[in-house]
Length: 116
Image (cartoon, one colour):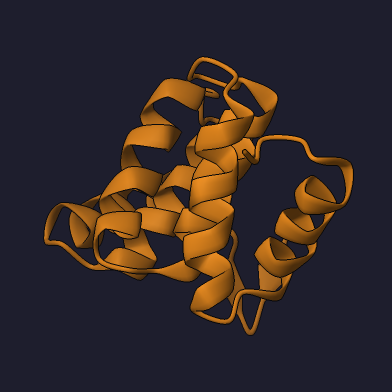
């Protein structure tokens, strides 16, 4: 694939995201988590590491990272399934304006799933 004259290189992109993520950039931590979760050509899928990076970004208040942690707990992907924990992450992200988390939290509340 070519984008604006540059060949796509997911492995090289991953390397740069790792560098930025290790330096503490929340957006890079999220992107690294997403890449590791899905895997790609030359990138092995690693859901456990993806959750680690989501958590680091979430600790900095990045709403999308909070949302991804909510999904991980909701689905039991690389963490034990826990709808109460999922609801907590969705609520934090929803309060920060994340529309996807607002939807998920609304759905959980509608069905009484993961809420007291």
